[in-house]
Image (cartoon, rainbow, N blue to C red; front, side):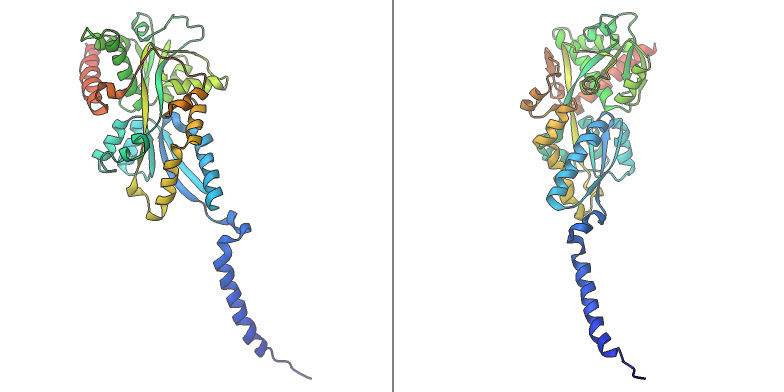
Length: 347
């Protein structure tokens, strides 16, 4: 019987197999049929309550498509939405958010005071960190049975007002400045005009909730005759035929501005290019048009004409008209609402 030894063949095959395996290992991430198997990169994003729909349904998918087209990489978003004060507290306590879009700059200041981010680091972003805006309006029952046409009507006897809670909701703080400012600007020669309007409205507050979204739920469940809320909340549902209320535009109201912060202490060096790309995307024209489509007012005024549902406001004002958030918080929210209005209501 004749025997054939395989040793000479194996001496040649083994090195070739090893080299082929190493080459395939090196090329594997770049092969088209393997890209789907590569673990996606992630962005951890926190936002105030009403952002959930636009971010999850429009902004995140648009960026995911853009990033994949540019790099071949998939991106997943880990997101959480709640009252602006609530998510700020969570970030201070250590949740690993890389980005947060807050209802008001005051919460960004709280994060900087807690050492989570550098002081005023958001001012280095486009538009000093403001991503979008929305004015504060009044929602009333269909047919407006209580004939509510302005903030002053909310002070009448027999009117029940639903309001978010200023202790947890950024929207509630905006609403307080809107209410005070409407009174002060309607009668600028009378120093107590803003206080009187604020007190009159809060005498009629019948329900409060932790966030603007939760206050909306209370109103929809039958509490009160009127809800003070973001225009965006109402327009989003109106555009989809789901609004069971009417929108009342006060003659004078504030345009809220929503501030983005980048939490670099939670962002690995390898992650920063991706985070920077998403940050820039938020101020791109495609993203700003998506915000407008979902009822937010763009920081670029020319884009707002794309949404004919935006209502006219006789005298819109901004937080800068009251010295910015640190001064408005001290003088209006703390000095007038908390120290005077609430004490008057407790008597």
